[in-house]
Image 1 (cartoon, rainbow, N blue to C red):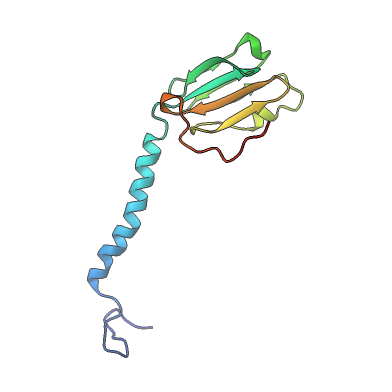
Image 2: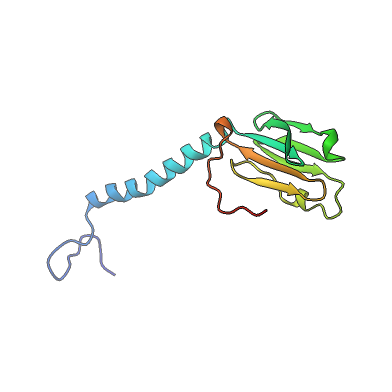
Length: 136
């Protein structure tokens, strides 16, 4: 095994102490970008709850609480830790409950039997992610 100070057959050093600076920068920039993005991710994010294609309510994801609406039947929506989930549903399969916690703009949960759609929106009602597809 070669030491750091050993030279190539061409006479060049394989690793110099100054090489560590670009390596640290290459590792630090994505890490900083990830940490800043994660901190600002839920800034101004809210959930839009609709039933039968009509918006029946909105919930800010930074305020914890439990919501229910008469139009949705026995469904309950729980907002906690910057996300929203369906915590109670009277539909037969309860697939909407298995969707889990939605916290990023663009995420959606659907309860087909109750005709309920939960969509997480970003600032100004816009999603931060593009739509990949649409099925009707």
